[in-house]
Length: 164
Image 1 (spheres, rainbow, N blue to C red):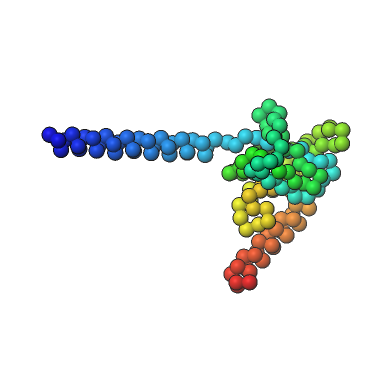
Image 2: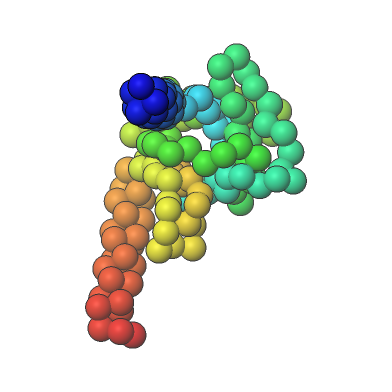
């Protein structure tokens, strides 16, 4: 009889642990499937170059919101320190919005694929590791920058392979 009680208790514990593990995994999978919040990027009128957003900066000013969008006011140097956590997926996303802003605060839409190109969250192997970046300029300028980035990446890979 005692052995039967021990068996039932052990079985109950195992089932409880499995249910708890299932719930933890389910919550994790659900959160990973949720889209990150959308961003609205305000780019200084006339700026051309790489935009770099450094995430997780504790002393960065609080990010304002406009409706569902976090407002990212890019500096004249193309950089922004953000207190928000780094996105884990595509950066920027299709729902993100981009505007050029003049000195009076007037906005003109910057179109992805026309004025805004590329976009990634850089994880390692770059001076921009842990940052989000995209390019502002013409498609021709972006093609040149992309070639340079690819050449730099190849040089780094070659240096690693050769031990230099």
